[in-house]
Image 1 (cartoon, rainbow, N blue to C red):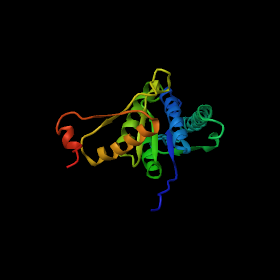
Image 2: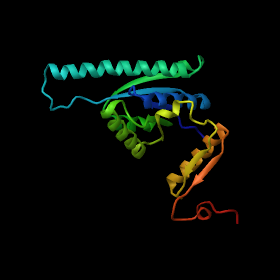
Image 3: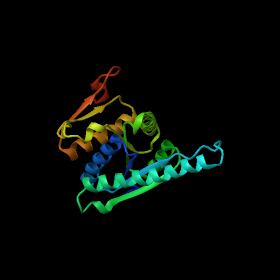
Image 4: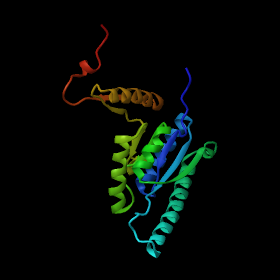
Length: 208
């Protein structure tokens, strides 16, 4: 059987927020565990076409370019610190000029996993990245990990079990395979949770 190769291993969406930094830290551990590369991606929303051509539009475009460079550099530095020296060369960066959800969903066609923060930077960023993470979860073509800011803190128990939500659907079956693999790689337990509807015996029938 031939292995399907992807353009990306792990994509991390970055915007300079605490959640974005947590996503980078989480992805670094995932990449080290799986011996995979990481691509940091920052999406730049194009300036609205109905904006008048003039100094204001140019100033916004210039700010977006400068901000994109800053965000990517911050992300690269954080990722380099999280990875060991032997893995640091596996860092790639891309700036995509599109709506963040569209850019990430399109990139997901050629990725094994996308990692996003749960919220963005600032009040507007929190609303935007919150909608981005939701949009990516709903439409991506690969595994999506949504990371909260406290995931990078020492308060997270690295030996906590993997929690799997099951409902018997094809998506649930794919999640089950992924959860068992994650639990095995992390050497932790796995808890399957099902709420309402069919019983666990129906979802996971025993032999015979």
